[in-house]
Length: 167
Image 1 (cartoon, helix red, strand yellow):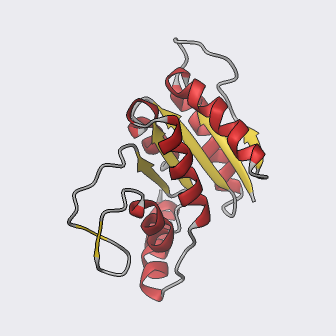
Image 2: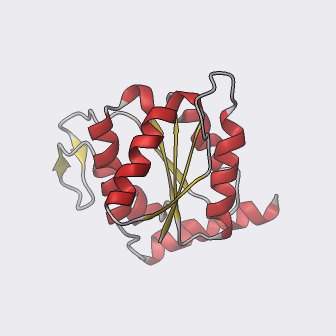
Image 3: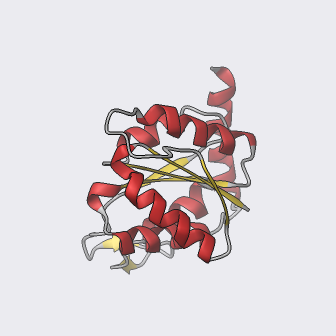
């Protein structure tokens, strides 16, 4: 499994830390930019490059970072075979429902659910809304989760693919 990283200036520092962290964990990482801090750069340039790599190799993963992660997720989801989930705030109300239908107080449960239900292959992080440790935990949870392969979830992914093909 290869992990592609992309960001603009808003997530540059966090991307560099995550790159080192993932390499230390034994992951193969490809940096798709930004390669230096430039407050005038544009996130679509780097997020598009990252999403293109994942689009061509859907068994690999992409992690993109921005100020909020919102625009980055929007760009990534324009690419075929990409299902990018957004995560930027681990605070959840105690009444959240986990994958088994029970109440959960785990702020990272959405990461397991997006992998299990949507087979998400990209993760967008909001650098302004996460600490470094929260981002690392989110990335590990995302990468360690897996697709459930339940027919209802596959059926929904197949419908997404039909939308992609019709564009």
